[in-house]
Length: 286
Length: 347
View 1: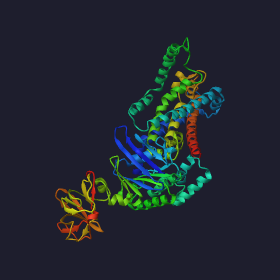
View 2: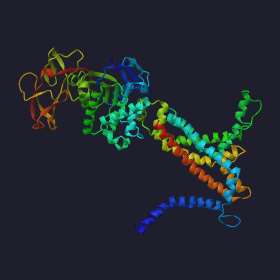
View 3: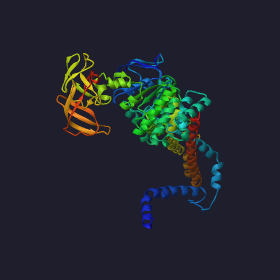
View 4: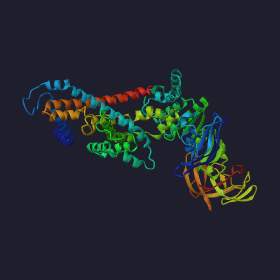
């Protein structure tokens, strides 16, 4: 290869690779270096494990880590579980299926913060849920539903927002399975659940993994749902990171939380994807 | 007791299309029955009704005397070989074959024995761990057949299983299917639009058109003694001529006056003769025709010769040898016993 050709290839790749390497790479680099004591806004730039030690020792961090991991796992698995039956139902077109499909995907167009705001309006003291509960006589006065300690509100919002995305990926994958393959499974004695377990799920595992990974990463880093509808006794990782940065300007510790969040996103999503494939494989062995 | 039976079966789809009407068919145990017809004649619909994928709109299905009309496919004693093979792409050859027995909770030892035996019979032992996409079309079809047979069904349903294979392979797999059917003794219902496949493989042929049965009979019967113009024209090639009855054994046609062996029945519409039915080189006597060649196509063993007949479609003959050319005058004789009369309309 001549140097001219090499230069041409580099030039052609630069718009794509450049964004990844320079923009994203620099963010990773700064976050990691900052967590080890560099890129300080104030003070000396020296290598230090002190920030890691302080953050890892704090109970608030371990609670935030567990909480974010929990929300991410529930959001990823829950969205996929909810999306599968709908994807199978919408596999073959029928009268009205396009409208149903479009309606189900509508949450994709609603920003997270707006969704949270709408949700709060529904479950607030003056919201329609409380009005309905009082109307049917379940309660005499409005009850507190928002910012529940069990994080049901956040889980609901995560599922509402992410299920359509899982549906988008799974519908295509499920539609690509031929009718004859499913008919063959049926003909060989497989009922509905076995057809799903032994044919549909293994043949759509890549779409399932993609959905799990992307939803897990998004939900692990959630900020909007948590600050508006989340419980007040625990913070998500993103919320905790912002909290550290905003209170006392602890940028280095915020960077530690940021890096931890990236590690959680990377390993958590990989683990989930590997687990999905492992369960399917062992399921196929009966 | 019949292995499989359809009684007054009809099928009307949601869009109002009538795929089948009034189908009555009995298949005996161990019989190889072919459903033959053009695209859209309802043969695959009938097969899917037998398999349980479609419910008939009216009528019922009996298997070994029991009503299975509302039984789902997984509860029927049938196994299907699909046109696209429908192998599970994520499972190996052996796992594909083992799928049915596993699903039906056959003990492991028996399962393994069945799989090994079948893979040996279809000559795929060496490929047992391969995924289906690593196999040729013929091999995939054999896996599909082994997978169906692993269920030990009393009836195997074949939905145009050879249509994706090339001519040579089709011939080979056709023989293999027939030989396995004889060896295992299962009842086979085979859907095809290929008349040569139907004639070569079947004990009985069911010729279908427009959702109805045109004729049922053994291959020789449907070929030699077609009852309708459709059957005559669809199976092989046939010359059809309108006629007027002169007396019980004489008819007048645009090709001339013919003496016939069997008199036409009341609803007969056409005189029918096969291109290979003529005696060549005969120039005197009854049923002799002299005509000019309007078209010819050399076919190797014979020349496909067309002669024009005023008021009727061109007539075709299989002229022995190749020494003929357009405008040559030829003479031939139609023996009375090779002339048939058929009902129905020209397609």
